[in-house]
Image (cartoon, rainbow, N blue to C red; front, side):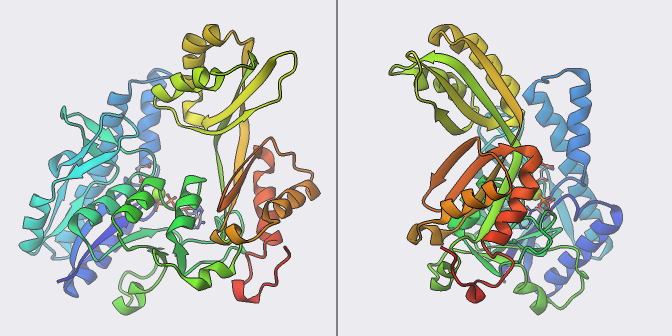
Length: 424
Ligand code: ADP
Ligand code: ASP
Ligand code: MG
């Protein structure tokens, strides 16, 4: 009997009525003979509500306690779903992350999954139950509840699918697949029926929130066939229509995929730029600044060191906006005196816009069309970074949507790749 993992996001679980629809859909798969494990998110808005309660008490709450609070959101939605399934006549049982257990490292609020013990789950499945496992959470080796970072239920689902060697992990959400860019920002965005694993990884890491980046990493590492599809269709549509819908993350080399030079545009407002001003331009400075930042488990994204004037230089880098305050504290406490920097300046009103495509490997002029398009819109670029298959820029966040729309048009992403003649 084939085993599948379904993941339902916050909107899909957003009300009792929606939870009933999820139960109807899961029951349909179960009755068709599939073994089903379901990984739900908290009901939409709930994680934000819970975290904001703690922030009312203090600006930087203890991260262990934040995990205790946030993990309750998924516990509620999972139990509700198990009850809804039972009301559909399906034997179902829900488990919190620590009950499975999903073992993680100790990094509260952004823990990584280390292992999953699926014995209980397998035994339940063998007894004909649907198993519901809370998304987003786990437990560390000391028994503390941890969470996997925002959007982490995607990663829970793919990790459970990997560990159970599921036939497919179906990520049900409020869009019917992965689009060339966020369809909420560009209504002309086109759904892709397949997206290469590499492109999906870049899109996710550059801000496309449709999948959490670690879920794509897991899917790649363990070759989990993963599909993004809509939870908002009629839950009783025939299975054969549902099975091939949405967007499949593709792990094979597919010649057709090279047809599009740029496949998608990702963007993120979760950025903040930090500049350490007037540091001496000498060996070891980058390490002195970024070493303590990395030791504090803060991820640095783009880095820019300007040419020196009078043997001093400005050193800029970007971090996730939620880490800005902590990064500045680390710099003040551990770096400023060591590197004898003049001051720190921060800019929270920045956004990152990226073009992504495996076809960029074999085409020149892609970045230049990007820069030309932005300059025609009068958008100033503050930082640039490139890799083989992406170019990212940091710009003022007020121009982010304009930049995404104009780039989507400039790269003809609203048209099917076969119908596009290259502008490069
Ligand atoms: P869920 O609550 O189901 O996890 P998310 O809000 O995390 O859903 O992710 C789905 C959202 O991702 C969509 O509503 C859409 O606005 C956004 N999104 C961003 N980039 C893309 C993209 N390239 N394709 C599809 N959706 C995207
Ligand atoms: N509920 C968590 C969040 O809002 C996890 C998730 O939805 O994937 O980030
Ligand atoms: Mg999500």
